Amino acid sequence: MNLPNIISDLVKAQNEFNSSAYANCFTENAEVYDEGQTHNRKAEIENWIDKANKEYQATMKPLHYNENENILSAEVSGNFPGSPVVLKYHFQLSDGYIQSLKITG
Picture 1 (tube, rainbow, N blue to C red):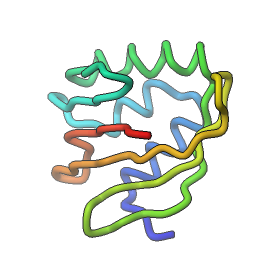
Picture 2 (cartoon, rainbow, N blue to C red):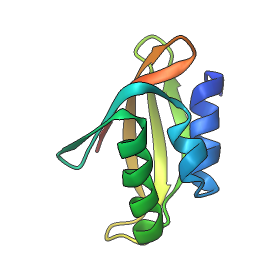
Picture 3 (cartoon, rainbow, N blue to C red):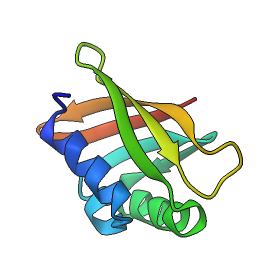
Picture 4 (spheres, rainbow, N blue to C red):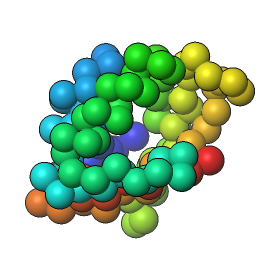
């Protein structure tokens, strides 16, 4: 699968539970939308993913990447009801970083 480098970096950071490396994949003023909440700016994104990593210990296995729409489908496994699930990661990229990420079921 031919993923943009920054998305590969995000998957690697998630699978290593490295919240700092995960947040560093984003622009300073990025936003993440997940489970009905929006997380703004890099510091808030790092706090959100750090809490999620501790609670769910979720790992990502990329399944398909739509290059035209920048959507990654991934199997996500962890300590949460219904695991594993397939989620879609809708990316907006800017200058080699993630500007926006929306996670949907």
